[in-house]
Image (tube, rainbow, N blue to C red; front, side, top):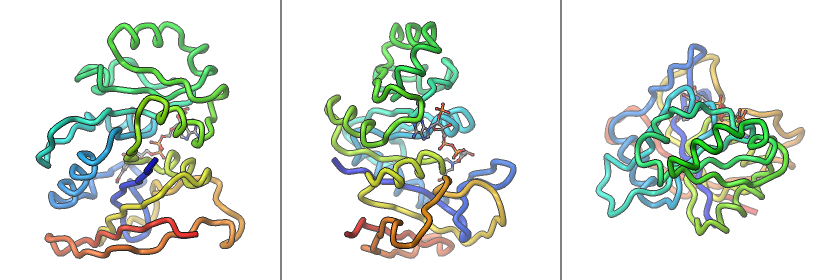
Length: 218
Ligand SMILES: NC(=O)c1ccc[n+]([C@@H]2O[C@H](COP(=O)([O-])OP(=O)(O)OC[C@H]3O[C@@H](n4cnc5c(N)ncnc54)[C@H](OP(=O)(O)O)[C@@H]3O)[C@@H](O)[C@H]2O)c1
């Protein structure tokens, strides 16, 4: 299994401003993101990103033979039933959730299943183990996972140490506050924190951002 996080961040590591403005990417960066989508078997976002941005998560800006699955990590099954992901090609859409989430949202579960959305149950409790999420995706036949945030999902994946690559575009903006790219309770010591080494560093064609590919190192 390969798990890659792709994020576009300000110089101070934010993916959205304090008012939720998250339009940080230039056209070249979006093309790179879509190249990664084309690589993936599934493109995932967290429930809040799904609700706030309502993305389609299709590959559009890069020539690709097929569309990957698109999915939402949503332990409490809280996303609304009328997202773009469920309206456009619902048979390519996944929700990864828990028994606790299903039990609290029976009607939504039945409705989405009837639309052809795949609902994968990965854990008992709504705060899911990301190791179990990855296992469930593996059982479903998925090997290459691209995660596009937000900060809370990114933290869950880093905390459970399932991330192989961080693909980060650093944009020359300083936001001062807002949502951090990895947003959770954090590690207590540097030693506990997982290490990543830079594999590739590229100045973007726009001249205003830098993309760094980081690989997990042990
Ligand atoms: N610049 C960029 O590249 C970029 C990319 C993506 C997003 N964003 C921005 O980031 C913001 C959203 O980020 P966010 O950090 O607030 O939210 P998020 O990570 O998108 O979603 C958080 C939700 O994901 C679910 N989740 C996370 N960890 C989980 C776990 N261990 N088990 C079960 N469910 C889990 C939970 O859903 P439930 O509460 O339903 O269980 C949680 O509330 C938006 O403003 C968006 O625009 C920016």
